[in-house]
Length: 201
Ligand code: NAP
Image (cartoon, rainbow, N blue to C red):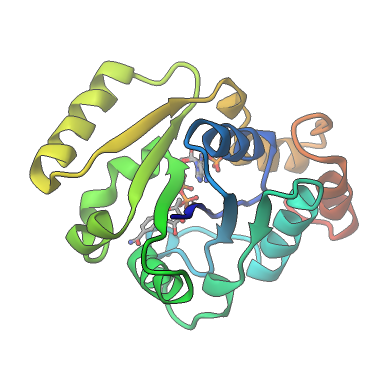
């Protein structure tokens, strides 16, 4: 039986926190590999300006290129309309052998909103969820919410604490716009990509 991680995020931009999370979860859950899925048109970000999906996809490719256990999918970038996770997992399920176990890895904040996601019952039945937290996160509060979700849907949600998630995409975007350094927060190739394409100015 294969076990595959699906790393979902907007990745605007991808940084070391995401990479450390994916590698840590891969090792802890003994996953065959992790597929990064940059969100195409996230439904919960209708009111925010997000960077063109092609840029976010290319930055994700640059950041993951040195890890043989990482790959990047264009599945959401190429799909028309909003990127609902349930549609992505349904499509991916068709591509893998039937006994494949899928682990959807994302931020704890995102997982806490899962009850508002499209077809949440179906989604929780199709894959296991791994929620990454950053330092300073209110863990008891989070555990309470997760216990509620687990009780309602009889599905386990795994929580992983990732110190490297102290890095955040929001902070990186702010730093670039203020002309402050982003070096060592993300791979150098991504840093140069941001500078070359004048992103986040
Ligand atoms: P977000 O709301 O921008 O992020 C929430 C928090 O999680 C942020 O602190 C973020 O940090 C962190 N985070 C995001 N992706 C992560 C990852 N892969 N690993 C570790 N931390 C992560 O969330 P988002 O990135 O837009 O969405 C996360 C995933 O949930 C995406 O795959 C999205 O498509 C899915 N989603 C689906 C629905 C739906 O189907 N209706 C609704 C909402 C989200 P950074 O800002 O530093 O990344």
